Amino acid sequence: MALPLVADARKLNDEELAAEIVNAKKKLFQLRLLQTTGRLDKPHEFKHTKHWISQLFTVQGERERAQSATTTQA
Image (cartoon, rainbow, N blue to C red):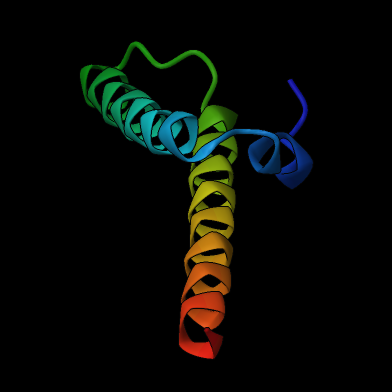
């Protein structure tokens, strides 16, 4: 599995973005549980999931900054 692209995150609307953040955090939690119990088959998924979460937060921050910039100018 390749690392997810930030372009994929930018295609999501605000509600989908928030839902995807929650889903990714749940996946990270599940990965931690699997690691603790010794049943984790793909340890690289930690990196991929953390990377995806950071991309989602980056897109969310960009949108918030763009929205605040337009509201302060108006």
